[in-house]
Structure formats: C-alpha cells, structure tokens
Amino acid sequence: MGKRIAVFASGGGTNLQAVMDACRDGRIPGEVALVVYNRKKAYARVRAEDAGIPTRYINKLQFETTEEKDNTILTALREYRIDIIVLAGYLDIMGPMVVAAYRRRIVNTHPALIPAFCGMGYYGERVHQAAIDYGVKVSGCTIHLVDEGADTGPILLQEAVPVLDTDDAATLAARILPVEHRLLPEAVALLCEDRVRVKGRRTMILDA
Image 1 (cartoon, rainbow, N blue to C red):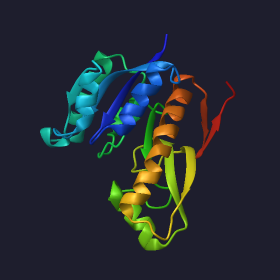
Image 2 (cartoon, one colour; image 1 turned 180 degrees about the vertical axis):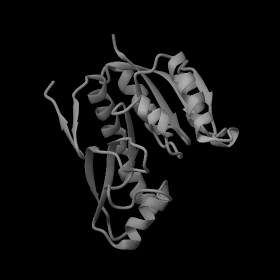
Image 3 (tube, rainbow, N blue to C red; image 1 turned 45 degrees about the vertical axis):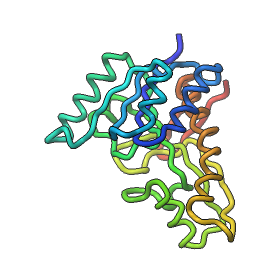
C-alpha cells in the first residue's frame, strides 16, 4: 500500500501539481490525501479540490500559540492517516510538535542552493533577487528534510542552474521552477520508498 501524503502550500500550487501528477503516473508510490493551505486565495486549494483531494485552511493567525496550531495540524494529519508531509511553497515554519511527530518524514523545496540565500525572509522572488544582487554565477534548488529551523534541515537533493547576465528575479525563477518540479517528486518518492538515511547533517540514499 502506498504512503499517504499531506502537501502544505501557500500559493499557486505548481509544486503541489507536480507531486499529484507524479502520484498519478506512478513515479511516487503514494497518494496526496490532504492539502493544507494558509492563504485563503491560494490556488493550491483549487488544484486540490479539482482533483477531489480534501483541503484544510490552517493559518497561524487563528491561534494564540504555536502549540494550538500544531495540535490542529496534528489532528488533521491523524484524521487522514498521513505518513509523509511535503512543504510545497509553504510560507510558514513547521511547529516543533509537528516536526517531532514526523521527524525525517517532512520534505521542503527551496529555490536556491542552501546554505546560500535561505532562512527567514528568503522566499519567492526575494531569493532570486538576492542571488542576482550578490553576483553568483549559479543558483538552483534544494530539497531538504525539515527540522525546527528555517531551511536548516539535512539536504536531500540539489541541482545547480546558471545565473545569466541578462537575468532578473522573474527569469531566474522561471528557469529554476521546472527543476523544483522534477526534484521534489523524486525526493517524495525516496521517502515513500524508505530509501533515505540520515547521519548527522548528511543524507544517504539507499539503492532501490
């Protein structure tokens, strides 16, 4: 039986779509069983509903404490028997109770080569503008396991993308996004297949 996946998203949901597509065509041995969104206008909700996937709106502003938010999230995850969590353009920090409950089973995508241009404040086109302003010759994307920090968990997959002299934040983002769409489903499949081992900050991928 395949793993049950919850995807957390805040925006357009293109990475969510990539994961749903990979589940449907068999590249991921699992199914998206729940989509959690924290912005009411998030198009990710529409993608999920169009695919017949249950959704939950959970925003930190609904709660007085992180513990209350974590308990609400964990209740939803238990209700849908979730095995793996995917953060796909999710603009919030996963709370410590959720991280503890799903240690090594939460994966996030970030549109830069961590540890560069990551952490609090680095999201969306801000990441790409920072890379261009610094003058780097390559950027890219990173898929990492999630811990209690912001973009600080062990790195699972990375791929470099050249930064062109003519790039602005939008054009660089447009070249990195398809790489995210390819790498994120690969990472989710690895978790579903239980092929990831972690030693300190290093991850090892077992043969299929």
